[in-house]
Length: 298
Ligand SMILES: NC(=O)c1ccc[n+]([C@@H]2O[C@H](COP(=O)([O-])OP(=O)(O)OC[C@H]3O[C@@H](n4cnc5c(N)ncnc54)[C@H](OP(=O)(O)O)[C@@H]3O)[C@@H](O)[C@H]2O)c1
Image (cartoon, rainbow, N blue to C red; front, side, top):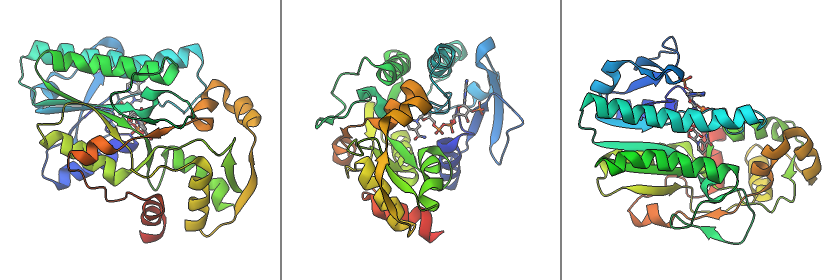
């Protein structure tokens, strides 16, 4: 698993271990070990510890510089591309060289594939990628993963929505204001937030490992469509805090985040129908239950 030290990887590797899988992490820093075996790689130098590839039955590719961690300068945009796409190419080359028979290659992707746009459309897996930055990142990321499929290895691409966890991620950034009792919608508040509880996302990855009928792109989002305003209101309710109005003005967010503000200020509905039709049952189909699980139970 690349990027296994990150938000999703930590949860997923723990869940996989509980299911009896032997998880090997591929990290740029071998000192970031935990209870899993950690191998090192240096994507800039095209280096991967050989044994990591030799021991792999499946590869889960989560590595990527954070999309919303820093302003999208030219350098940052390049890093966002390279850390996902070049790394994927490196994995492909090393798998080819090693001659191992990989059972599946499973790559993260994002609902950003459909672009940062607010519309009434409900996007599904057959829709084309957007030509904006997030769409271009996801299109090229998935295209690099498709090299595995073209070489006969089952390949699954998980178009992930905003992942809800107790700590970190996008929710982690919304929490302080809501906890202080000054939570309010962002921009118009009418933009949708395609979201998913971390447990459901991990279960979808685990299904992708075991379910040989899964290939190609799959949206990983809860079936309930929620706008930004409804999201913050639910969060405030679960935390028993007031929900403020008026909303944070779009202009302020644009000044603070530049072009990156688009991923906060825009968002459409994304369909969960394909994964539901494949028999997946969401543990948390409704936002309020997901938030209660994260913030009131543990
Ligand atoms: N979290 C979400 O809401 C969300 C939504 C949609 C899609 N995704 C995608 O899912 C994947 C995992 O997300 P996450 O939230 O777990 O990310 P994360 O917490 O930021 O972790 C990503 C991991 O990628 C590795 N990484 C970071 N910069 C890198 C670079 N320049 N080159 C190579 N590796 C690098 C790091 O591992 P090492 O330091 O150990 O190498 C890091 O732990 C990402 O690709 C992300 O875009 C996430």
